[in-house]
Length: 171
Ligand SMILES: [Zn+2]
Ligand SMILES: [Zn+2]
Image (cartoon, rainbow, N blue to C red; front, side):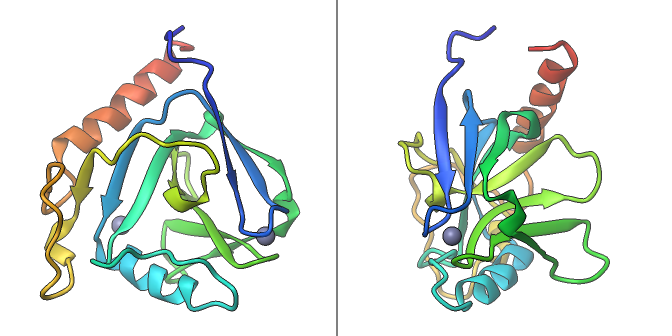
């Protein structure tokens, strides 16, 4: 067991009815500029009372957790899945009580979820990378604080795979 576990953080909707518990260190902390995240972000943050999803440059900040380490603690019945297109393999879970976007997940057996960073009530370590920057809106100047990648970089995939391997070995 890693020395960093268990560290607990809580992700909550704006009104507090929906709550998730995050256990241990996240897989990765990234900001995504892909066209899907932008389209979904514009839609979701336009819902009544909804908190902002996109940052000033059109990015969506996510904290990626293993599915088994991000557990709904209350209000699960208030969650609704938003799909960009009927055939999308992804879904974004919204807390219907206050229209807060909680996480991006998959319909299939993918082993991680991408949690909207703004939902965390406790401290989250700094962003590590900016990805899919080829979709950055025209004229938006991205901060040069962390590595930027036009697509999904190897470093991103590698962290996901490492998390999968750790799960298979029961860690
Ligand atoms: Zn709520
Ligand atoms: Zn994206």
